[in-house]
Image (cartoon, rainbow, N blue to C red; front, side, top):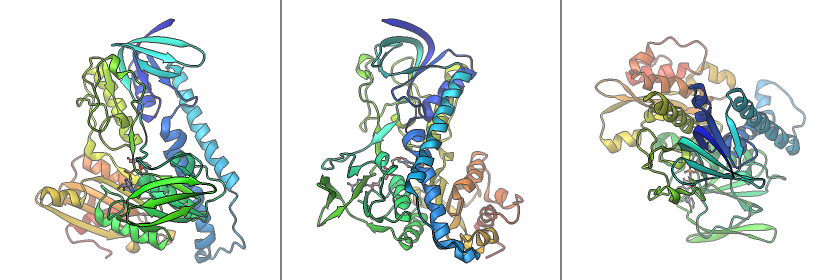
Length: 463
Ligand code: NAD
């Protein structure tokens, strides 16, 4: 069997793995990256963040043309969806971006292996493909194999009528009735896409609220807005089974009648991808949730083996994995590398978008931390009025004594872009006074952030 030596072998070419590979190459390491899929980019680029955002944008434009253009005095006699074109556009974006990662690998002289990687003892990785088996040796190995959808017991995913986000990126035709299991990120984003395109969408959620973990005031606002858009929520509903039955799917829930749908989207969370990795060959044990335990420098209990991204604890977010990839590699090479977990934003790309960074009000109440809050609604923001998107608000939470910003939560137009300012503010230890005294261009949505900072001290100007 052929054998090749590297400084670093990375298993998985998702946002964690490919970014770590590029940073390691920049720092002078001889790097190999093993990926089993033909395309690089992982879940995020191939079947996650990127294709879902393409569909969210297309479906939102459709709704704007259909329902909102008239208010701007634009008459469009007839608006139709060409689903084939919409899906093809999404696929082309995926192709361009995944090919882009190929290009970045070539530019940075990263050796790419396609095949299933398995640890074969300390410092050894076996790569098996249909064509050949190669053994790689390396001083350092990073496991960045990501996650896959959790399928609860009783749910029979056949990929036809009952499936995950992967299938929900390509339904054709538009389902008449889509049942979504789970009111988290995926359920709300993809539920919104198909609702806009004409499906009846029923979201079944086990808890008594949507978007668990997010600030509950903002999540409550979101629920009302999504209900107005026509999403039907059934909370406190535990799904016990879902299966395909001839030309439909049947979903059963504890204590209520079964529901028939043409498509079921299972979106109840994801779990670490550690199957067939050969962890036993190096004696690596998983934690109680099947994740790989690491120290603050992403080192596992086995010298020379590291893990980053969705396979370790923390939010399953592409940008979290990227930060960890960079910090892990920098620590290996320079002895320093750090991720500030308090400044990792979360964004739900619905309409309106929902974005959050730092502590939620629920967190602060639980910790009994002294805090003050400032809120500013987009209905009092001139730019939001011009856009015709006045729903939502900015909420800033700051320490009651020191005024240091603890958390920022936004529901409203372009919240996903606005949150970047809040993340920088928190990273720099800013006070709400710092934000309030920073000049924000007029008229912009960002003025709502400044006004919320002023509102922390009860001195917002426009409300
Ligand atoms: P999630 O954890 O966001 O939400 C899952 C929901 O399913 C929860 O509300 C949970 O209470 C509910 N649930 C669990 N079991 C259930 C049952 N039997 N019946 C009914 N409801 C049940 O998970 P997700 O939406 O699947 O997303 C998976 C991961 O992907 C998340 O960690 C998320 O961070 C990530 N993601 C992020 C983005 C983004 O950043 N925009 C988009 C998509 C996915």
